[in-house]
Length: 580
Ligand code: AMP
Image 1 (cartoon, rainbow, N blue to C red):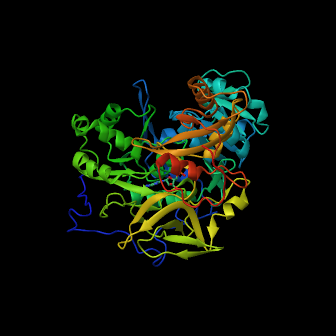
Image 2: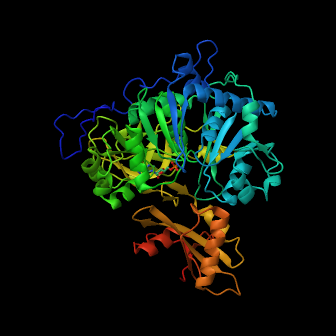
Image 3: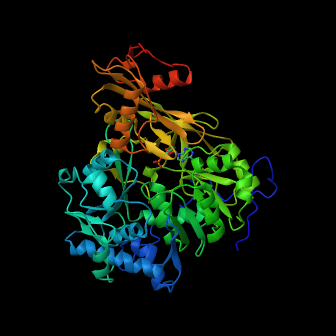
């Protein structure tokens, strides 16, 4: 069993402080952007780097993935198995006439086929595009349209419930593969196809800058954004997996994120496999006892999870953890939302070490700021920029930016240049270009850097909502709400919640002929759940006579939120309507 590290929390034991962070911007970048380029032809294919390379090096029999089914099944897949399965999946795609660059959408729970599909798609030079399986029909359809989906891999139940009705509207769609042995009409069952497909499929030649992944993320206005990432991202996944999460060959690692979100792909598939770890995949949703039992039984060494789950652990108390032997854990990390300082301190008491917070986003493709292994942890801080990553706090001044000194709050910005950075927003180059000003990439987050170079998250600079680690665009929710015949206008905000970080709340006005009532509230909430899925739909809907709007007619979500929270209303000079 791995040795526990000697964690250091600021204000406690600083006596042996080791700071592994190089000074931002100093010297040559510590990550090698050409680390995985093929010497002969310069190609980089993520599947080759994540799987085949290890098989060639003699590790075909090492367990790559331990799958825990929600009904108690346990299955081990070796690197050799992943190679075989991903070759078969790539062969299926080829046999159906699909070609390099085609986008393969995946909409299913955490089942082994998902991993075969991710690696097989990349192997075939196609673009892996995962969606969260709890999305409702509307977010799925919008994303498939934007992404020009050629293939959809899903389950029969999801297909029938959420897709069959509008499938024909996605004119790009050529193939729907259904996990299992049977498929509804117009779809193809994946099981028999995989069994019959060739297990030999050499990774397609992909240049380092060839598209590999699309991750959708929400926008404050307009449609969701498809952030495009390239094969060479793998160089940064490998580096950050090692240096932010301490992944070593053979490490037993559990990233609890779903691959429908970027964390579940970058650090739930690519970074672990590239670093030749054994990763745990749990099909089931959060269940505290199951989680502790999994850590105990599988001897998890590195655990990467999210603040919402950590807060639920805290709520269950130290006694719940004490019932299990969790001594295999040697590094704990958290991402996705602000991690409360109490949670960091609590975890040191209960697990013998703090949760190490780190920060990044869909666009950056990998961890940018982290409490790295060996670093003194300041509870409540996201840590310091990763080696080779230059982060700053800036203020916008007309068309330029001013870098702010330590301790001032401003927008968190990064100097672009690492391999896993997005290369565009699909079909929205102008929206992408707007993220870059004066040589900085603007993250949309507000933060502060202290005198020791640690970064502290303050909040979002925009209206996006983070609920249970999932980024929700208010516009998408508002659009679904106003589809209901009773709703005239909608304004959607996130309000603080002890467990989920934020919850989605909607303010609506009604069309003539409709009156506010509990029954109508329930009906509209039901409509939103059906359209958007439970993860995205508002938890509460409030009826208003009117909503605060600017003179140009934009609903002022900021003002709705200030009023909800009893905060100062700030600048309301552009306010037009104000009757609540
Ligand atoms: P996503 O693109 O869905 O991964 O969401 C990225 C956003 O989540 C960031 O821009 C932040 O607003 C938030 N976020 C991610 N990690 C952290 C963190 N460690 N602390 C606070 N907020 C975070």
